[in-house]
Length: 200
Image (tube, rainbow, N blue to C red):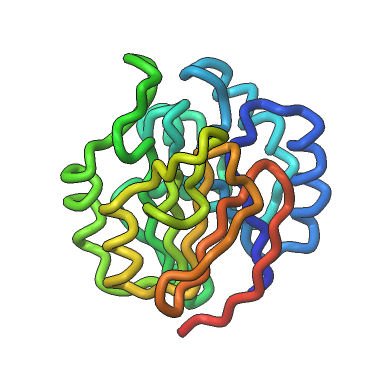
């Protein structure tokens, strides 16, 4: 399956247009959160992506809540947050929000490590984990050189060992990749990222 994946669109019109164009060659599109800014403009962000006709699976970032994303979702969009879905034999499980809790204040949709662990625990197997936050130690370094990823997400990847773990959130690590066991981890950013995956 040919998969197009991105994160952290933040209502960037030009980036959205590039993603819509690229999506014409995709069997599946994945959005790893932060479609809007500070809980504002989500409907407009969805309109920017409305030209995507392939199945679209998304998790909320810390810039939009799961409920807000489900309300604004496009007709071809499945929103995951502590749950999973199967598309053409491919098993996907998603967890959005900032993990651990960010310093950004009340507008930010965040989870503690304990909350994230509880929401990831139902997932016993998956081909792809769709996350907003990166795992601790992989693609999670800020401009200050600090690794700020999630220990709960890393533990889930170690336990589940999906083929792919896709994330965003830490802008300074966009484009960075790594591995945890046999899992490839990628911090996506708002550009077309391509993956070819066969269901396990």
